[in-house]
Length: 83
Length: 80
Image (cartoon, rainbow over all chains, first blue to last red; front, side):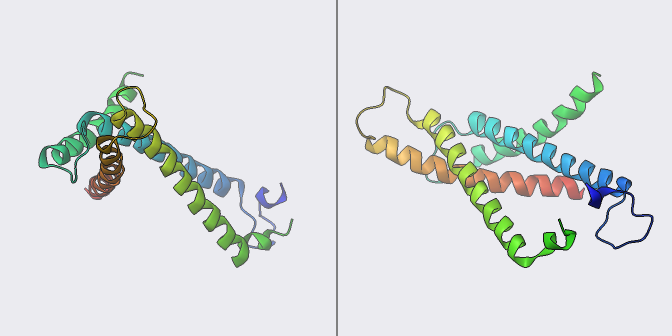
């Protein structure tokens, strides 16, 4: 694809260098991974914390969700340390 | 393809609309799946009982409440 070749000829700012393209892809990937992870957190925390949906979130449900999110965000780091 | 066409406002507007539609679709699908599991515990009858209806409605709203809490929490974690 022409727009992704090295723009060292200076022929227009709409052309990305390979490095810029790679950086952009990395950023988008990181974003996608983060969103996917949050999806899982949402599902699991709802499962565990809200057993009978009421007319509003009770205090215990809210604190359960907070704890669940905190604990879940530590899990990928601990798992990564295994490798 | 002329790269400047990628910046056209029409295309941007279209992409944003499609993105929003996709997000809404995804939310509806998720709520349906999650709330069905949570609220329809016995064999489904030929219509929802009043307790099932109430549960489904509450479930959808509490799920949205929870989404807000999670987003705020993640934001504050990123700021520290």
